Length: 220
Image 1 (cartoon, rainbow, N blue to C red):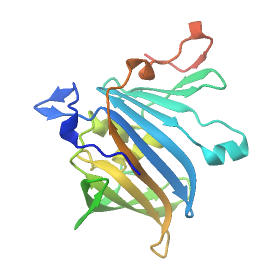
Image 2 (cartoon, one colour):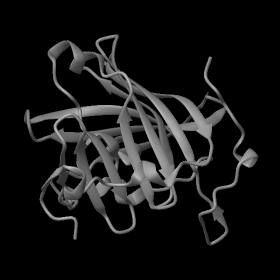
Image 3 (cartoon, one colour):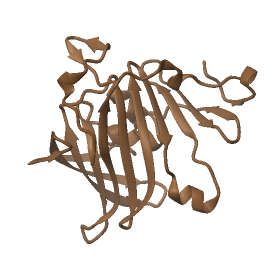
Image 4 (cartoon, one colour):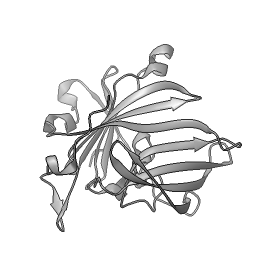
């Protein structure tokens, strides 16, 4: 059973214009074709974000590691950390262009997920890798505020689904459905736990050369 806690139970220390921002953890299931293939954990504290892969099933089956990502949403510094390979790769910003913008339909359909009221968005965007148009259904709540949420749309990577459409800067995506040509769910990313708690700042520390890591790119 998922742990659900009301937002007023814990106030984040990060506030801007009277807004209290979420500090804690999200547990997320990633499924494809109806089969769970990965579980991730997303950590938030102030300007800091980290994504871990708690149970990357498909990666284990294939014998490779999925790097973790640490991201400062204010400075836009982002690092991919390969713990097994002892490497840190700093990643570049991916600016939004006309070619990768999304078409967003805001519906009047609402559902509750994990006790939070979510609105349905239908997002259509081009997949440049396969030259196809993809359709997503996003269930978005504005009851959970993520600090600097709009920054997530500036990068490509696992974390972008938090603000998958660049227009969704005011809400957190709790469920993302990728639809096939028949309108059926082909892939699903869904938050399964929302845990409000203080996070140890060490979670957002990026390893250094002095700690035996190879550094790729610049963190400046």
